[in-house]
Length: 143
Image (tube, rainbow, N blue to C red; front, side):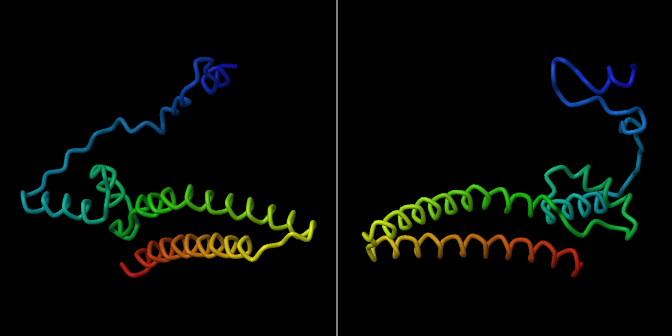
């Protein structure tokens, strides 16, 4: 019963973390000014908005360093997602109308052309998705 009361909160919000998941143990590490600048520059170059998260990942990684930032991929996907949805909705609208016209023998080349324009746009957006994902994955492999 005690576990159940911790996992559900009638006021909403994020569930409380368990005691072993809390990051409440500070560690003091001293660096020279050059080392500190280099670390902050590294985190900035990789696109980490919070250097402390980068430092923790770098310190705890098995390979001895963090060579990628998934935030860049997430940002690219978040920018392209709504655009892809709009293009897909337009294609569906045009396809429905073309089907209606075809059933009633009223097909016009103008509508076929519009469908092709939207379909080409969809292919372009999907290509951007592919390029973004491949670029991110290359950073994982190359570094």
